[in-house]
Length: 183
Length: 457
Image (cartoon, rainbow over all chains, first blue to last red):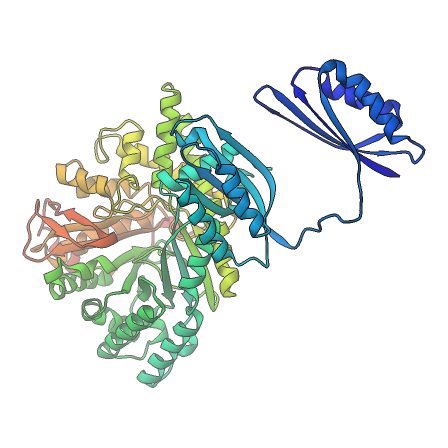
């Protein structure tokens, strides 16, 4: 069995997931994972499906485009490769939150620092509505910090980067949020 | 995946509502340090505390940073010294207290509890020596706390001990008179003292406890108040049943935090985790007050009519939420109403809304008792003992813990202020109506028999 990954992007409306999954089903593909999100008016969805060895991937791409072009949706189809994939090191889950006035470069500033420490982002929600209301300008990162990373230097670097960008930054182990909010 | 609302509400609790862990208290047994050689006991005690508590502060700080939850106080509770050092003379007991003080200082904790005796049914030689040593021990040390259990539901009230404690408090006040009798702020007389209290001045490690153990006191008055304010702002029609539900949910969250942090510290130190104490403990900081919760429930001030009912509601809701969050709940587990340690309560006492009589009524529905109550310096030992006896009776009959931490401030009168500094705050001296009319009763002595409630088997 081979696996493919399909991503779809465009204005949100009813029927997008239905259209993609119908084409995949018609071509003998079995969906293993789907995730979608909507930012403002825009839809983004990612599908991972296994497909029969006999399937012509280019042909599948044409069928998907044929179906999605009239809906003005962009589509990307790739084979999933096992080789060369990044292997996550042992890590611990933390949550980074930032609050502060909006300005260009905030996401780049924080994520650049995370990347330099090899910290992987597993979930990100960032909202910038402009102005100085901190509640309307937040970034919440769920991250995995490799156990090999020195937590004190990482913390200092992160807080330092926050100060440079006038952001209030917090870094906390994920367990505390689970403890407070989950029964 | 966490929701952003969950994450932001947690941050709000931390930043603006004083969510923290109020105390992590390391219990250390000293029973096997017992020796017939005074110096040998002291040496073993110092070395035991040094070894077991060496990393307490650093582990607490590390865990606090990792989870983003500050651990405000790190403390030590040892076996009752009257048991562990039972063959010592009063003067040798003072030396033990000095050694406890320097051991506490060496490991960086702010208080060490356990200069204690359990005398609800009578005195051993060690108990008498320890109580005799209390005034000098508390005057000579900074970090040592002392507690005496003078009554229990099973034993009744040892009125000889109550009278002796009246005299002891008086003497302690005299010896620390220059600092507004601060020695008395480190001395508590109990009924039904639990053996696993993490809060001072009552913390000690009971004889049924393990070699070492971590007990945790959660915080939360600020968090509870803000939760109530938010809920009432969103829906002004909420009734007391619904508000009690809000307190319950908040207590659940606060307790989960306390247990998580306590367990991580215990792991870090390689000792077992004991209990979470669900007490709402205030500090003299704005927004960290138990008194303010009463205002959030619609009372003009703590102390006015309606206060006891409101306190009953708060205390019960905290226990219900906490008991669901943790299976290992212990210690005092109830709201504290320490007059000087809570800005709002101190202010209410200053205005005259809160009297000794009202505080006493409140202690029938919450955990501690007459806590950090400053009295006139000329209050007699007999009057102090009589106030303590009343408090003991409430505990004994209601099968609950009560305590008295009374501070007769030398040279000061009702209406004047006593200043203790730091976490202990400051308090207006309360009038004690009917003073000097209890002497004959107190001097009768003996033991008030255990009540019929004690026959539960």
